Length: 303
Picture 1 (cartoon, rainbow, N blue to C red):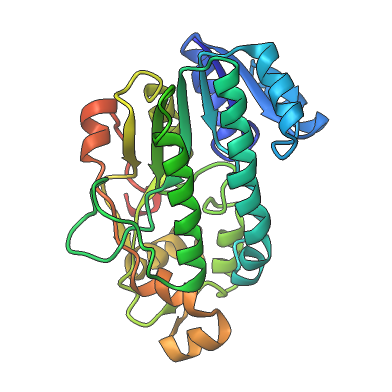
Picture 2 (cartoon, rainbow, N blue to C red):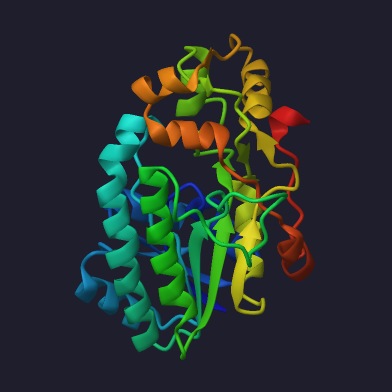
């Protein structure tokens, strides 16, 4: 199958290219720079340079490739995972996902691509009991940045899944960890944990769903052949912040993470970190296991 990937040099893009090439697919990765083009080629794929926000450039690239399937992994996230930098990057990231994604899908449709796969969220489900399935709502009524992100993901899913002439698949990934992510021994969060700058707010009962980038890539390859729809691509052992963060610190050989009151966290980190600390809900991967034969590894610092 001829597969076109946007966001080809991102945290999931790199292992995804390797997985696709290894599975025998004809892969073309889109990147916005010559440096990224070199990375794509080193992974064994062909590459094109185009800015997702340039609709004409995207259309030209897509017309040259004429792919069978397109995988949209567009993001524009900061290097550091801090409340301030996430807020600063939010508008840019939203524009890339919404406008860039729309350009990509329009070009894919015009070029005749039948299958369209898009990145979505598996960690922003609305509060409820137990692990959330794909049928349950996302957290539109949450803290400001979480609500804004959910609105963005909702628009993306509606765009992709409502297409009458394409087979739409939305993959609701958990928090990425592993090489090239914030959550790895040489990543930004690890540095913050070593410096005791990554705190547990309140009781820390927010439940985080994770996925290793290699496992996410494997599920994305499988999604080329699955029934269209929504899939939670998350691990089998979602964990409360008060559980996984101390374990991560121990895994790194770092000092114990600090605990702060919600009132103090509101002043220092803002309402979104309180939401992450106390209200996140884990997701179920039962559907992905059944239909994609998804077999995620256990979170490495909880093994």
